[in-house]
Length: 150
Image (cartoon, rainbow, N blue to C red; front, side, top):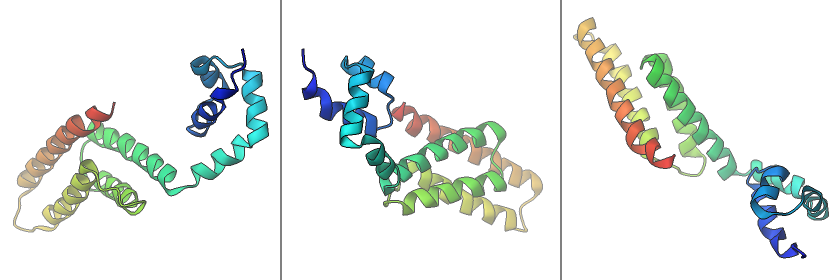
């Protein structure tokens, strides 16, 4: 039975980053057929072009943000980690106006952390309490927001 009606769906799956093996499993089309379709329609070039598009880049930035967010929660919230997260969140925001809650929360908490560090009237114990509270807040943000995406 001919499966040419699956060609558009196969191309879409390929452009989304799936391998021939994965597409073959999902659609039941042989790898040889997929390879032939890919050559006929220049899927590789289309995939490369898509990966340079702002939305694809933004998706990669979102993945980096999620990874760094996890790392910060495990290592602890400090100015260096806050700065890294803030930069990633700012890049994400610039790449298509994506302003999600976790990114916005990190930006706000980073500015707040810099304020706390610079505030001369706060004792080291008070600053430490604020950092711990900030880390708890970011952990709650992760549980609420990233937990929904998985």
